[in-house]
Picture 1: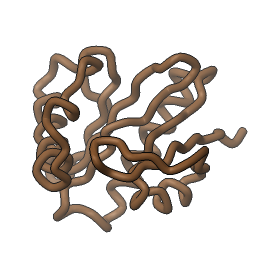
Picture 2: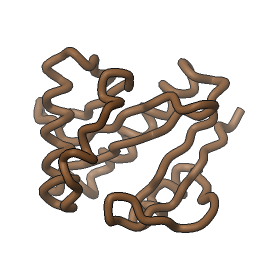
Picture 3: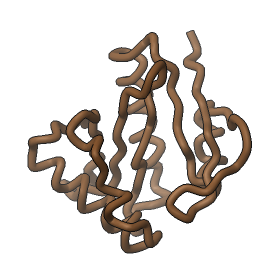
Picture 4: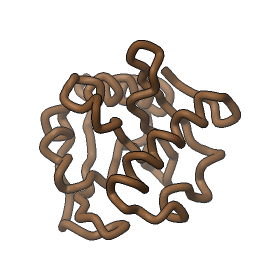
Length: 141
């Protein structure tokens, strides 16, 4: 479900991101919580009323950037990340049809995104101390 920045759901989004990125992956909190927080579209997946996965969309030039995609460790492998991505991709296609879907995928997660139709672009680079791969998605008409 889409979450508003000023909602209680946004606090659940932040909790998941702190758990996954800051605690699990050692991303500095000042990099994780950034100056773009108030301008993004947020998504939250619940399982039995428990917040388990999140992501955000941000307009960046001619792109709609998929960012901060995270699933809490105990809930990985259950198809919830796929559910999240399909919801985000559908929303982006409907609300931002002229923008190119783009992301900086953690290299380890790139095969997951490739199965959803995303294609690697350019060289591997390091962001927040983690190898990443730029990826784009071309929606099928």
